[in-house]
Image 1 (cartoon, rainbow, N blue to C red):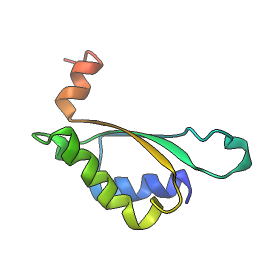
Image 2: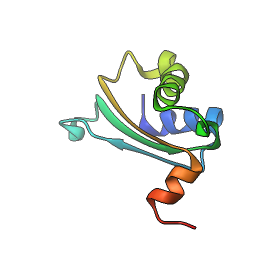
Image 3: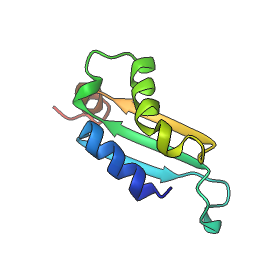
Image 4: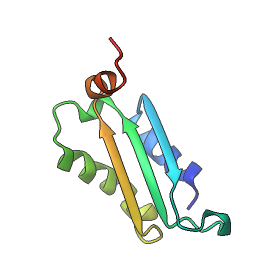
Length: 89
């Protein structure tokens, strides 16, 4: 599973306003992705707690990557949280 494929899946399902996926594998040069960090901002996260957001991401990616990726770090933000974090007004 490539990072681009993961991006496509999340963009199709959630239509985020911001999405960044980093390969945080211990040895990224060997082309085997084992660890990723996902930073995602989308409207669907409004009024959802952190657990619900993470469950949604795992549900979307379950069939595609959970068997291949050992670790996923999730940073999920509503639009207002993202704006506050980045001092956007």
